Length: 295
Length: 274
Image 1 (cartoon, chains in turn purple, yellow):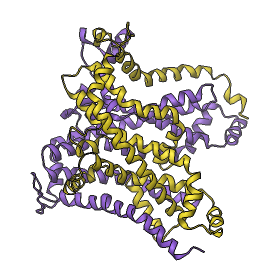
Image 2 (tube, rainbow over the protein chains, first blue to last red):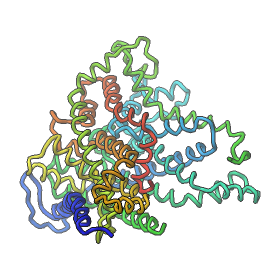
Image 3 (tube, rainbow over the protein chains, first blue to last red):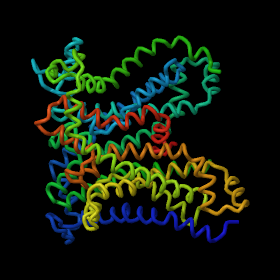
Image 4 (tube, chains in turn red, yellow):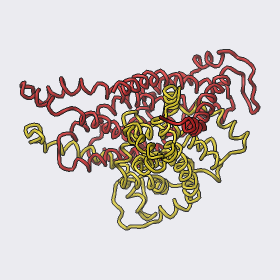
């Protein structure tokens, strides 16, 4: 019943966007991959073939090994922290307490703020100075007689990145809560009532009824947060500058490309980042879009 | 009606909830009390104390440093937000109601662009922008419009797909054209989706750092880059940095406070759960 003229017109309307996506996303990804297989180092582009050399070099590069270790620590602390905090908050807010909307708004507001602002403020909160120069959270712990909590935060060797993850948890646990809350709200009340009638305690209901139903939400949360932690960049820059101890692949890529002009290596890091994100996201998109179609 | 037995005797929950509220508010507290202290009261050792006198020294000083970049951010974010919202709305309309052959393949391809680490397009992007002489704010606007296509298209497509096809067909029987249906039927009822997308794009463009830092020079820095450089310099005191952070966060915070529900819908859409 649609006229052909309208069909062409509709296609013409989305054509600019499709072309933009094809060029600026897929074309540029292809271009990046090509750069990663080249010898380009310096101001002028050099596409001379280098094969996989840039990738092989990365895996014997001590700095890249630090990056991988930091990414793993960051990801584990950040994802587990967000899930635990987010889930518990969601469960508490699902009890029909007065003031629920207030708490929800409060827990979610850090999502509106940039990682840069978060990083700048948390840098001062996590000031590692000691003695009479003590400040920030350490000072607060000392006021509260919680001296055992005083620590060096992001300047701790090896584990410093976990302190950065703490700031990231502050920023994104509210978002995790929102995802779980949406999941909890979609569970029919009858299901809980039925379990109650069967004599299940509330803890049992959460453990054996609600948690299994929320598995798909947990999976989404894992994937969304996991891919965010692979990309973490601005937060670390704002908290720690370009300290080698807190280096991650995204920062290495940026520095080696735009400060060091080693474009080929930068592109190789970027490609590895893309692959690791795609491994998480592509199956996720596939399942999400497929289940949407079945509805 | 909620089951009583599940919902009573839960008042102890206010304990952990208030504890967590303090956790979320700590950085805000420090930002605010530091900002309102006069210079002579500022001291890292008394960072948790309330100001004894209220002053605006820190905000004035921070604003003096950041005013040009706040202006740059607004000049960049407003057009980027408006253009990408309209683009997303048109795309969403066509992909939901005028599926052409291959639309089901195109849509996931567009969507994937939402998740990619932008490092993987950064080198070609910078080269391209230099070669067409689109550096600075105009280049940044174009970048936000293009990389905003996935999320804006997704939000509108999901909304339009939820509308019954009969709505479109009825209008067409009355003689409306493809664009007529959009202009007179869909556009008026998609205001809430526009609010969601406008907020989302405003927030992500305002908060972006990566594109800004590679595409702009120091006269065109948006607020995130300027604030980061301010924080990295040894010259500017921490109290001014705190005040500057609040200035940088204020626009998106206000949007969140007044339009939180729409913000949340954008967040859920961004995880494909909207």
